[in-house]
Length: 234
Length: 234
DNA sequence: AAGCGCTTGTGAAGTGGTGCACAAATCGCG
DNA sequence: CGCGATTTGTGCACCACTTCACAAGCGCTT
Image (cartoon, chains in turn brown, yellow, cyan, green):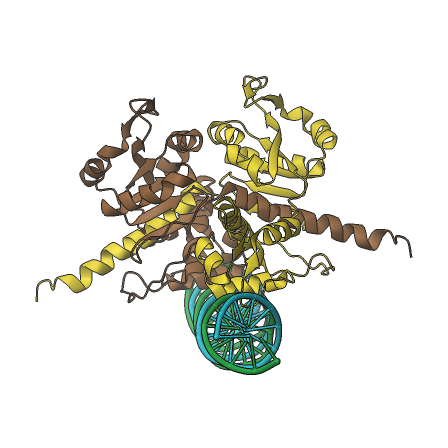
Protein backbone atom coordinates (compact mmCIF):
# COMPACT_ATOMS: atom_id res chain seq x y z
CA UNK A 1 0.00 0.00 0.00
CA UNK A 2 1.17 2.73 -0.22
CA UNK A 3 3.15 2.91 2.45
CA UNK A 4 3.91 4.49 5.80
CA UNK A 5 3.47 1.88 8.53
CA UNK A 6 1.82 2.26 11.87
CA UNK A 7 1.94 0.05 14.91
CA UNK A 8 -1.41 -1.03 16.23
CA UNK A 9 -0.94 -2.87 19.49
CA UNK A 10 -4.63 -2.54 20.27
CA UNK A 11 -6.99 -5.34 21.17
CA UNK A 12 -9.67 -6.49 18.76
CA UNK A 13 -13.25 -5.89 19.77
CA UNK A 14 -16.44 -7.67 18.87
CA UNK A 15 -17.24 -5.09 16.25
CA UNK A 16 -13.77 -4.92 14.84
CA UNK A 17 -12.04 -8.18 14.58
CA UNK A 18 -8.36 -7.64 14.06
CA UNK A 19 -8.24 -7.38 10.31
CA UNK A 20 -4.91 -7.84 8.56
CA UNK A 21 -3.67 -4.60 7.02
CA UNK A 22 -3.68 -6.18 3.61
CA UNK A 23 -7.35 -7.01 3.99
CA UNK A 24 -8.27 -3.51 5.12
CA UNK A 25 -6.52 -2.13 2.07
CA UNK A 26 -8.64 -4.29 -0.20
CA UNK A 27 -12.05 -3.78 1.39
CA UNK A 28 -12.57 -0.42 -0.32
CA UNK A 29 -11.92 -2.01 -3.67
CA UNK A 30 -14.49 -4.70 -2.94
CA UNK A 31 -16.89 -2.00 -1.91
CA UNK A 32 -16.45 -0.15 -5.18
CA UNK A 33 -16.95 -3.34 -7.16
CA UNK A 34 -20.05 -4.18 -5.15
CA UNK A 35 -21.59 -0.80 -5.79
CA UNK A 36 -21.01 -1.30 -9.47
CA UNK A 37 -22.57 -4.76 -9.37
CA UNK A 38 -25.51 -3.38 -7.47
CA UNK A 39 -25.93 -0.60 -10.01
CA UNK A 40 -26.03 -3.12 -12.84
CA UNK A 41 -28.77 -5.12 -11.17
CA UNK A 42 -26.88 -7.95 -9.50
CA UNK A 43 -28.43 -8.95 -6.19
CA UNK A 44 -26.09 -11.84 -5.55
CA UNK A 45 -22.50 -12.45 -6.51
CA UNK A 46 -20.13 -15.38 -6.14
CA UNK A 47 -16.65 -14.99 -4.72
CA UNK A 48 -15.35 -15.67 -8.19
CA UNK A 49 -17.46 -12.93 -9.71
CA UNK A 50 -16.62 -10.34 -7.11
CA UNK A 51 -12.98 -11.29 -7.18
CA UNK A 52 -12.85 -10.66 -10.90
CA UNK A 53 -14.59 -7.32 -10.54
CA UNK A 54 -12.11 -6.30 -7.88
CA UNK A 55 -9.05 -7.69 -9.62
CA UNK A 56 -8.05 -10.25 -7.01
CA UNK A 57 -7.91 -13.99 -6.47
CA UNK A 58 -11.15 -15.59 -5.28
CA UNK A 59 -9.58 -17.48 -2.39
CA UNK A 60 -8.11 -14.26 -1.10
CA UNK A 61 -11.46 -12.57 -1.37
CA UNK A 62 -13.20 -15.32 0.58
CA UNK A 63 -10.58 -15.21 3.28
CA UNK A 64 -10.87 -11.44 3.50
CA UNK A 65 -14.62 -11.66 3.84
CA UNK A 66 -14.35 -14.42 6.39
CA UNK A 67 -12.68 -11.91 8.75
CA UNK A 68 -15.92 -9.94 8.66
CA UNK A 69 -17.85 -12.96 9.93
CA UNK A 70 -19.06 -13.10 6.41
CA UNK A 71 -22.38 -14.62 5.62
CA UNK A 72 -22.28 -15.87 2.12
CA UNK A 73 -24.51 -18.79 1.24
CA UNK A 74 -22.79 -21.93 0.08
CA UNK A 75 -23.84 -22.95 -3.35
CA UNK A 76 -25.14 -19.44 -4.00
CA UNK A 77 -22.82 -16.58 -3.18
CA UNK A 78 -23.00 -13.29 -1.32
CA UNK A 79 -25.94 -10.92 -1.02
CA UNK A 80 -24.67 -7.74 -2.60
CA UNK A 81 -26.65 -5.23 -0.56
CA UNK A 82 -25.89 -6.97 2.68
CA UNK A 83 -22.20 -7.14 1.92
CA UNK A 84 -22.08 -3.45 1.02
CA UNK A 85 -23.74 -2.67 4.31
CA UNK A 86 -21.27 -4.79 6.22
CA UNK A 87 -18.14 -3.41 4.59
CA UNK A 88 -19.34 0.16 4.98
CA UNK A 89 -19.97 -0.51 8.61
CA UNK A 90 -16.52 -2.00 9.17
CA UNK A 91 -14.87 0.89 7.38
CA UNK A 92 -16.85 3.36 9.42
CA UNK A 93 -18.44 4.94 6.38
CA UNK A 94 -21.95 5.08 7.74
CA UNK A 95 -21.52 8.58 8.98
CA UNK A 96 -20.22 10.79 6.17
CA UNK A 97 -16.83 11.82 7.47
CA UNK A 98 -15.78 15.41 7.35
CA UNK A 99 -12.34 15.99 5.86
CA UNK A 100 -10.16 19.07 5.96
CA UNK A 101 -7.96 19.90 3.01
CA UNK A 102 -4.84 21.98 3.54
CA UNK A 103 -3.08 23.54 0.57
CA UNK A 104 -5.18 24.82 -2.29
CA UNK A 105 -2.54 24.86 -4.99
CA UNK A 106 -2.66 22.96 -8.20
CA UNK A 107 -3.42 19.59 -6.71
CA UNK A 108 -5.45 20.82 -3.75
CA UNK A 109 -7.69 22.66 -6.16
CA UNK A 110 -8.37 19.47 -8.06
CA UNK A 111 -9.02 17.49 -4.91
CA UNK A 112 -11.43 20.12 -3.65
CA UNK A 113 -13.33 19.82 -6.88
CA UNK A 114 -13.29 16.06 -7.05
CA UNK A 115 -16.86 14.82 -7.11
CA UNK A 116 -15.98 11.25 -6.20
CA UNK A 117 -15.67 11.87 -2.49
CA UNK A 118 -19.30 12.53 -1.73
CA UNK A 119 -20.45 9.27 -3.23
CA UNK A 120 -17.91 7.30 -1.28
CA UNK A 121 -18.42 8.33 2.28
CA UNK A 122 -16.67 11.66 2.60
CA UNK A 123 -17.14 15.33 2.16
CA UNK A 124 -14.57 18.05 2.17
CA UNK A 125 -15.71 20.22 5.04
CA UNK A 126 -13.09 22.96 4.92
CA UNK A 127 -10.26 24.30 2.79
CA UNK A 128 -7.18 26.02 4.15
CA UNK A 129 -4.16 27.78 2.78
CA UNK A 130 -1.37 29.87 4.21
CA UNK A 131 -1.23 32.21 1.23
CA UNK A 132 -3.45 35.25 1.91
CA UNK A 133 -3.97 35.75 -1.80
CA UNK A 134 -5.76 32.45 -1.98
CA UNK A 135 -7.85 32.93 1.14
CA UNK A 136 -11.42 33.87 0.32
CA UNK A 137 -11.47 32.11 -3.01
CA UNK A 138 -14.50 29.91 -3.48
CA UNK A 139 -14.07 26.39 -4.81
CA UNK A 140 -16.99 24.09 -5.36
CA UNK A 141 -19.13 26.02 -2.91
CA UNK A 142 -16.48 26.17 -0.22
CA UNK A 143 -14.48 29.23 0.79
CA UNK A 144 -10.75 28.92 1.36
CA UNK A 145 -9.87 29.97 4.89
CA UNK A 146 -6.59 31.01 6.38
CA UNK A 147 -4.74 28.27 8.17
CA UNK A 148 -4.82 30.28 11.39
CA UNK A 149 -8.50 29.42 11.61
CA UNK A 150 -7.79 25.73 11.47
CA UNK A 151 -8.11 24.92 15.16
CA UNK A 152 -11.44 26.64 15.39
CA UNK A 153 -12.95 25.00 12.31
CA UNK A 154 -11.66 21.53 13.08
CA UNK A 155 -13.28 21.65 16.50
CA UNK A 156 -16.49 23.07 15.11
CA UNK A 157 -16.92 20.51 12.36
CA UNK A 158 -15.60 17.55 14.33
CA UNK A 159 -12.91 16.83 11.78
CA UNK A 160 -10.52 13.97 12.42
CA UNK A 161 -9.18 13.32 8.92
CA UNK A 162 -7.13 15.77 6.91
CA UNK A 163 -5.49 15.89 3.52
CA UNK A 164 -2.18 17.68 3.08
CA UNK A 165 -1.62 19.04 -0.41
CA UNK A 166 0.99 21.66 0.37
CA UNK A 167 4.54 21.93 -0.92
CA UNK A 168 6.96 19.59 0.83
CA UNK A 169 8.54 22.22 3.06
CA UNK A 170 5.19 23.12 4.60
CA UNK A 171 3.93 19.60 5.17
CA UNK A 172 5.55 18.85 8.52
CA UNK A 173 4.49 22.07 10.25
CA UNK A 174 0.99 21.65 8.85
CA UNK A 175 0.89 18.09 10.14
CA UNK A 176 2.01 19.25 13.57
CA UNK A 177 -0.70 21.86 13.59
CA UNK A 178 -3.36 19.41 12.49
CA UNK A 179 -2.36 16.93 15.15
CA UNK A 180 -2.38 19.59 17.83
CA UNK A 181 -5.96 20.30 16.80
CA UNK A 182 -6.95 16.67 17.28
CA UNK A 183 -6.67 15.28 13.77
CA UNK A 184 -5.63 11.64 13.93
CA UNK A 185 -5.54 10.55 10.29
CA UNK A 186 -3.62 12.25 7.52
CA UNK A 187 -3.44 11.66 3.80
CA UNK A 188 -0.21 13.25 2.64
CA UNK A 189 0.38 14.26 -0.96
CA UNK A 190 3.55 16.19 -0.23
CA UNK A 191 6.74 14.40 -1.25
CA UNK A 192 8.27 14.05 2.20
CA UNK A 193 8.19 11.84 5.26
CA UNK A 194 6.00 13.03 8.10
CA UNK A 195 6.94 12.23 11.64
CA UNK A 196 3.90 11.85 13.83
CA UNK A 197 2.94 10.30 17.18
CA UNK A 198 1.96 6.64 17.28
CA UNK A 199 -1.73 7.31 17.57
CA UNK A 200 -1.83 9.18 14.27
CA UNK A 201 -2.20 7.31 10.99
CA UNK A 202 -0.54 8.61 7.89
CA UNK A 203 -0.93 7.43 4.34
CA UNK A 204 1.19 8.88 1.62
CA UNK A 205 0.53 9.34 -2.07
CA UNK A 206 3.42 10.50 -4.20
CA UNK A 207 2.76 10.78 -7.89
CA UNK A 208 6.39 10.88 -8.90
CA UNK A 209 7.10 7.74 -6.89
CA UNK A 210 4.37 5.85 -8.68
CA UNK A 211 5.83 6.86 -12.00
CA UNK A 212 9.32 5.91 -10.90
CA UNK A 213 8.15 2.43 -9.98
CA UNK A 214 6.63 2.11 -13.44
CA UNK A 215 9.84 3.44 -14.90
CA UNK A 216 11.74 0.62 -13.25
CA UNK A 217 9.53 -2.01 -14.84
CA UNK A 218 9.69 -0.19 -18.12
CA UNK A 219 13.46 -0.07 -18.03
CA UNK A 220 13.54 -3.71 -17.03
CA UNK A 221 11.27 -4.79 -19.84
CA UNK A 222 13.22 -2.91 -22.46
CA UNK A 223 16.59 -4.31 -21.46
CA UNK A 224 15.31 -7.84 -21.02
CA UNK A 225 13.40 -8.08 -24.24
CA UNK A 226 16.43 -6.70 -26.02
CA UNK A 227 18.68 -9.46 -24.72
CA UNK A 228 17.28 -12.73 -26.05
CA UNK A 229 16.46 -11.24 -29.45
CA UNK A 230 19.77 -10.33 -30.97
CA UNK A 231 23.17 -11.72 -30.17
CA UNK A 232 25.57 -8.84 -30.40
CA UNK A 233 29.28 -9.06 -31.18
CA UNK A 234 31.49 -11.79 -29.73
CA UNK B 1 1.67 -1.14 -3.27
CA UNK B 2 -0.78 0.13 -4.19
CA UNK B 3 -2.00 -2.49 -5.66
CA UNK B 4 -2.70 -4.15 -8.94
CA UNK B 5 -0.30 -7.08 -9.26
CA UNK B 6 1.59 -8.19 -12.30
CA UNK B 7 3.38 -11.44 -12.95
CA UNK B 8 6.96 -11.04 -13.98
CA UNK B 9 8.40 -14.41 -14.87
CA UNK B 10 11.41 -12.80 -16.50
CA UNK B 11 15.01 -13.64 -15.82
CA UNK B 12 17.29 -11.24 -13.98
CA UNK B 13 20.12 -9.69 -15.95
CA UNK B 14 23.49 -8.40 -14.92
CA UNK B 15 22.22 -4.88 -14.88
CA UNK B 16 19.00 -5.69 -13.13
CA UNK B 17 19.25 -8.16 -10.39
CA UNK B 18 15.86 -9.47 -9.52
CA UNK B 19 14.77 -6.89 -6.97
CA UNK B 20 11.91 -7.74 -4.63
CA UNK B 21 8.82 -5.69 -5.39
CA UNK B 22 8.89 -4.23 -1.92
CA UNK B 23 12.41 -2.96 -2.52
CA UNK B 24 11.54 -1.41 -5.85
CA UNK B 25 8.69 0.42 -4.20
CA UNK B 26 11.05 1.93 -1.65
CA UNK B 27 13.89 2.96 -3.93
CA UNK B 28 12.13 6.12 -5.08
CA UNK B 29 11.69 7.20 -1.48
CA UNK B 30 15.39 6.67 -0.83
CA UNK B 31 16.13 8.67 -3.93
CA UNK B 32 14.02 11.57 -2.74
CA UNK B 33 15.69 11.52 0.66
CA UNK B 34 19.13 11.38 -0.95
CA UNK B 35 18.41 14.39 -3.10
CA UNK B 36 17.37 16.28 -0.03
CA UNK B 37 20.51 15.24 1.82
CA UNK B 38 22.60 16.25 -1.16
CA UNK B 39 20.88 19.63 -1.30
CA UNK B 40 21.67 20.25 2.35
CA UNK B 41 25.35 19.56 1.83
CA UNK B 42 25.72 15.95 2.98
CA UNK B 43 28.26 14.04 0.93
CA UNK B 44 28.06 10.87 2.95
CA UNK B 45 25.25 9.28 4.90
CA UNK B 46 24.98 6.26 7.15
CA UNK B 47 22.27 3.65 6.71
CA UNK B 48 20.79 4.92 9.95
CA UNK B 49 20.69 8.49 8.70
CA UNK B 50 19.19 7.66 5.34
CA UNK B 51 16.72 5.26 6.89
CA UNK B 52 15.44 8.02 9.14
CA UNK B 53 15.13 10.43 6.26
CA UNK B 54 13.17 7.87 4.31
CA UNK B 55 11.05 6.67 7.20
CA UNK B 56 12.20 3.07 7.27
CA UNK B 57 14.22 0.69 9.40
CA UNK B 58 17.98 0.80 8.84
CA UNK B 59 18.38 -2.95 8.42
CA UNK B 60 15.75 -2.93 5.74
CA UNK B 61 17.50 -0.09 4.00
CA UNK B 62 20.83 -1.89 4.03
CA UNK B 63 19.24 -5.03 2.67
CA UNK B 64 17.53 -3.07 -0.06
CA UNK B 65 20.77 -1.40 -1.07
CA UNK B 66 22.61 -4.70 -0.99
CA UNK B 67 20.46 -5.83 -3.93
CA UNK B 68 21.99 -3.02 -5.95
CA UNK B 69 25.46 -4.43 -5.35
CA UNK B 70 25.73 -1.51 -3.05
CA UNK B 71 29.05 -0.02 -2.28
CA UNK B 72 28.84 1.61 1.07
CA UNK B 73 32.01 1.83 3.09
CA UNK B 74 32.01 0.07 6.43
CA UNK B 75 32.68 2.39 9.28
CA UNK B 76 31.70 5.36 7.10
CA UNK B 77 28.46 5.06 5.18
CA UNK B 78 27.28 5.63 1.65
CA UNK B 79 28.47 8.24 -0.84
CA UNK B 80 25.36 10.28 -1.51
CA UNK B 81 26.11 11.29 -5.10
CA UNK B 82 27.15 7.80 -6.05
CA UNK B 83 24.06 6.26 -4.52
CA UNK B 84 21.80 8.73 -6.30
CA UNK B 85 23.48 7.82 -9.53
CA UNK B 86 23.03 4.13 -8.90
CA UNK B 87 19.38 4.28 -7.92
CA UNK B 88 18.53 6.51 -10.84
CA UNK B 89 20.23 4.07 -13.12
CA UNK B 90 18.36 1.10 -11.71
CA UNK B 91 15.06 2.91 -11.97
CA UNK B 92 15.83 3.91 -15.53
CA UNK B 93 15.58 7.61 -14.79
CA UNK B 94 18.68 8.64 -16.66
CA UNK B 95 16.77 9.41 -19.77
CA UNK B 96 13.89 11.73 -18.93
CA UNK B 97 10.89 9.60 -19.72
CA UNK B 98 8.10 11.01 -21.79
CA UNK B 99 4.66 10.50 -20.31
CA UNK B 100 1.27 10.88 -21.94
CA UNK B 101 -1.65 12.13 -19.88
CA UNK B 102 -5.16 11.22 -20.91
CA UNK B 103 -8.10 13.07 -19.43
CA UNK B 104 -7.74 16.75 -18.74
CA UNK B 105 -10.53 17.19 -16.24
CA UNK B 106 -10.18 18.37 -12.72
CA UNK B 107 -7.41 16.02 -11.72
CA UNK B 108 -5.73 15.78 -15.10
CA UNK B 109 -5.44 19.53 -15.14
CA UNK B 110 -3.65 19.49 -11.82
CA UNK B 111 -1.32 16.71 -12.90
CA UNK B 112 -0.47 18.52 -16.11
CA UNK B 113 0.49 21.53 -14.06
CA UNK B 114 2.43 19.65 -11.43
CA UNK B 115 5.98 20.93 -11.40
CA UNK B 116 7.39 17.99 -9.48
CA UNK B 117 7.65 15.66 -12.45
CA UNK B 118 10.43 17.42 -14.27
CA UNK B 119 12.75 17.32 -11.31
CA UNK B 120 12.16 13.65 -10.78
CA UNK B 121 12.86 12.08 -14.12
CA UNK B 122 9.73 12.70 -16.14
CA UNK B 123 8.07 15.17 -18.38
CA UNK B 124 4.54 15.21 -19.59
CA UNK B 125 4.98 15.05 -23.33
CA UNK B 126 1.38 15.19 -24.46
CA UNK B 127 -2.14 15.80 -23.19
CA UNK B 128 -5.25 14.16 -24.58
CA UNK B 129 -8.96 14.40 -24.07
CA UNK B 130 -12.01 13.07 -25.84
CA UNK B 131 -14.05 16.21 -25.25
CA UNK B 132 -13.70 18.51 -28.28
CA UNK B 133 -14.41 21.55 -26.11
CA UNK B 134 -11.23 20.88 -24.19
CA UNK B 135 -9.06 20.17 -27.21
CA UNK B 136 -6.83 23.09 -28.08
CA UNK B 137 -6.64 24.43 -24.56
CA UNK B 138 -3.11 25.18 -23.47
CA UNK B 139 -1.89 24.00 -20.07
CA UNK B 140 1.58 24.70 -18.85
CA UNK B 141 2.87 25.21 -22.37
CA UNK B 142 1.25 22.08 -23.74
CA UNK B 143 -1.77 21.96 -26.02
CA UNK B 144 -4.52 19.44 -25.35
CA UNK B 145 -4.98 17.18 -28.35
CA UNK B 146 -7.86 14.98 -29.34
CA UNK B 147 -7.52 11.37 -28.36
CA UNK B 148 -7.75 10.33 -32.00
CA UNK B 149 -4.25 11.69 -32.44
CA UNK B 150 -2.90 9.47 -29.72
CA UNK B 151 -1.37 6.76 -31.87
CA UNK B 152 0.50 9.28 -33.95
CA UNK B 153 1.88 11.26 -31.02
CA UNK B 154 2.85 8.24 -28.97
CA UNK B 155 4.90 6.90 -31.84
CA UNK B 156 6.44 10.27 -32.55
CA UNK B 157 7.51 10.98 -28.99
CA UNK B 158 8.47 7.42 -28.12
CA UNK B 159 6.06 7.30 -25.21
CA UNK B 160 5.77 4.11 -23.20
CA UNK B 161 4.21 5.38 -19.97
CA UNK B 162 0.77 6.92 -19.70
CA UNK B 163 -1.41 8.38 -16.98
CA UNK B 164 -5.16 7.85 -17.10
CA UNK B 165 -7.15 10.59 -15.39
CA UNK B 166 -10.48 10.05 -17.09
CA UNK B 167 -13.82 9.16 -15.53
CA UNK B 168 -14.14 5.47 -14.67
CA UNK B 169 -16.31 4.54 -17.62
CA UNK B 170 -13.70 5.76 -20.10
CA UNK B 171 -10.68 4.21 -18.45
CA UNK B 172 -10.83 0.72 -19.95
CA UNK B 173 -11.27 1.83 -23.57
CA UNK B 174 -8.52 4.39 -23.12
CA UNK B 175 -6.25 1.73 -21.67
CA UNK B 176 -6.98 -0.54 -24.62
CA UNK B 177 -6.16 2.25 -27.00
CA UNK B 178 -2.94 3.12 -25.20
CA UNK B 179 -1.84 -0.49 -25.21
CA UNK B 180 -2.60 -0.87 -28.89
CA UNK B 181 -0.29 2.10 -29.46
CA UNK B 182 2.54 0.40 -27.62
CA UNK B 183 2.24 1.86 -24.15
CA UNK B 184 3.37 -0.72 -21.59
CA UNK B 185 3.03 1.08 -18.26
CA UNK B 186 -0.07 2.81 -16.97
CA UNK B 187 -0.76 4.88 -13.91
CA UNK B 188 -4.51 4.76 -13.39
CA UNK B 189 -6.37 7.38 -11.37
CA UNK B 190 -9.81 6.22 -12.43
CA UNK B 191 -11.69 4.25 -9.80
CA UNK B 192 -11.95 0.96 -11.65
CA UNK B 193 -9.97 -2.18 -12.37
CA UNK B 194 -8.19 -2.28 -15.70
CA UNK B 195 -7.70 -5.55 -17.45
CA UNK B 196 -4.52 -5.60 -19.46
CA UNK B 197 -2.15 -8.14 -21.01
CA UNK B 198 0.62 -9.61 -18.88
CA UNK B 199 3.33 -7.49 -20.38
CA UNK B 200 1.67 -4.26 -19.32
CA UNK B 201 2.19 -2.86 -15.82
CA UNK B 202 -0.57 -0.98 -14.10
CA UNK B 203 -0.44 0.97 -10.90
CA UNK B 204 -3.57 2.41 -9.43
CA UNK B 205 -4.13 5.45 -7.27
CA UNK B 206 -7.60 5.95 -5.87
CA UNK B 207 -8.07 8.90 -3.57
CA UNK B 208 -11.32 7.67 -2.09
CA UNK B 209 -9.77 4.32 -1.26
CA UNK B 210 -6.96 5.98 0.63
CA UNK B 211 -9.46 7.93 2.66
CA UNK B 212 -11.54 4.84 3.31
CA UNK B 213 -8.52 3.03 4.70
CA UNK B 214 -7.92 5.97 7.01
CA UNK B 215 -11.57 5.92 7.92
CA UNK B 216 -11.25 2.34 9.07
CA UNK B 217 -8.43 3.19 11.43
CA UNK B 218 -10.28 6.26 12.59
CA UNK B 219 -13.40 4.25 13.31
CA UNK B 220 -11.30 1.64 15.04
CA UNK B 221 -9.52 4.15 17.22
CA UNK B 222 -12.72 5.84 18.28
CA UNK B 223 -14.48 2.65 19.32
CA UNK B 224 -11.45 1.20 21.04
CA UNK B 225 -10.47 4.21 23.04
CA UNK B 226 -14.06 4.51 24.14
CA UNK B 227 -14.07 1.03 25.64
CA UNK B 228 -11.45 0.98 28.38
CA UNK B 229 -12.21 4.50 29.53
CA UNK B 230 -15.66 4.35 30.99
CA UNK B 231 -17.47 1.39 32.41
CA UNK B 232 -21.06 1.80 31.41
CA UNK B 233 -24.17 0.46 33.12
CA UNK B 234 -24.15 -2.81 35.07
C1' DA C 1 -36.40 -37.30 0.80
C1' DA C 2 -32.32 -38.27 -1.29
C1' DG C 3 -28.86 -37.08 -4.59
C1' DC C 4 -26.24 -33.74 -7.30
C1' DG C 5 -23.89 -29.64 -8.48
C1' DC C 6 -22.26 -25.55 -6.90
C1' DT C 7 -19.98 -22.33 -3.73
C1' DT C 8 -18.41 -21.04 0.70
C1' DG C 9 -15.25 -21.22 4.64
C1' DT C 10 -10.89 -22.73 6.31
C1' DG C 11 -6.78 -25.80 7.69
C1' DA C 12 -2.39 -26.16 6.14
C1' DA C 13 1.45 -25.52 3.20
C1' DG C 14 4.05 -22.17 0.65
C1' DT C 15 6.01 -17.53 -0.29
C1' DG C 16 7.92 -13.19 0.48
C1' DG C 17 9.42 -9.70 3.47
C1' DT C 18 11.20 -7.98 7.98
C1' DG C 19 14.32 -7.24 11.64
C1' DC C 20 17.67 -8.95 14.77
C1' DA C 21 22.18 -9.66 15.76
C1' DC C 22 26.75 -10.27 14.59
C1' DA C 23 30.95 -11.05 11.80
C1' DA C 24 33.63 -8.50 8.50
C1' DA C 25 35.60 -4.34 6.96
C1' DT C 26 37.21 0.30 7.23
C1' DC C 27 38.93 4.52 9.37
C1' DG C 28 41.35 7.38 12.70
C1' DC C 29 44.41 7.79 16.31
C1' DG C 30 47.94 7.05 19.36
C1' DC D 1 51.31 -0.66 13.16
C1' DG D 2 47.80 -2.18 16.05
C1' DC D 3 43.57 -1.12 18.49
C1' DG D 4 39.05 0.60 19.20
C1' DA D 5 35.10 2.84 17.36
C1' DT D 6 32.02 2.65 13.80
C1' DT D 7 29.10 0.99 10.21
C1' DT D 8 28.17 -2.18 6.51
C1' DG D 9 26.49 -6.62 4.67
C1' DT D 10 23.96 -10.79 5.65
C1' DG D 11 22.49 -15.45 7.77
C1' DC D 12 18.66 -16.71 10.19
C1' DA D 13 14.46 -16.91 12.64
C1' DC D 14 10.12 -14.94 12.56
C1' DC D 15 5.87 -13.13 10.88
C1' DA D 16 2.22 -11.84 7.63
C1' DC D 17 0.04 -12.83 3.78
C1' DT D 18 -1.20 -15.87 -0.16
C1' DT D 19 -2.74 -19.88 -2.33
C1' DC D 20 -4.22 -24.47 -2.59
C1' DA D 21 -7.33 -27.91 -1.85
C1' DC D 22 -11.14 -29.86 0.20
C1' DA D 23 -14.85 -30.77 3.57
C1' DA D 24 -19.13 -28.75 4.86
C1' DG D 25 -23.34 -26.66 3.55
C1' DC D 26 -27.03 -25.08 0.62
C1' DG D 27 -30.66 -25.33 -2.88
C1' DC D 28 -32.66 -27.44 -6.82
C1' DT D 29 -34.46 -31.25 -9.09
C1' DT D 30 -36.40 -35.50 -9.42
